[in-house]
Length: 87
Ligand SMILES: [Zn+2]
Image (cartoon, rainbow, N blue to C red):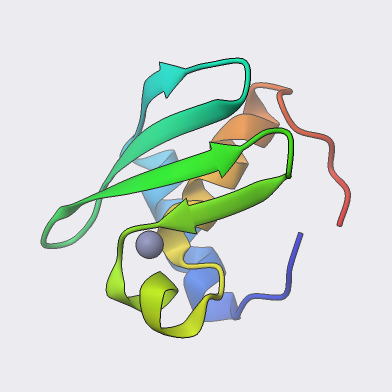
């Protein structure tokens, strides 16, 4: 788990708790999510082999830091037991 701000954590938690995270597709290599954001829907991809995340929102593309959408999906995976709580 990378370092992310409390504000993003809260936002991600909110998205997760309010069922804004939807799984689009699960393949052996990747998991594709749709996250319903405040203004638009975002696509989040988790690469299971590389243990890497990406999102199509501005925050991610500008800073390459975990955004609330990625955090929400991470919570979802952890909830389903699909991810090991490391990092
Ligand atoms: Zn994002």
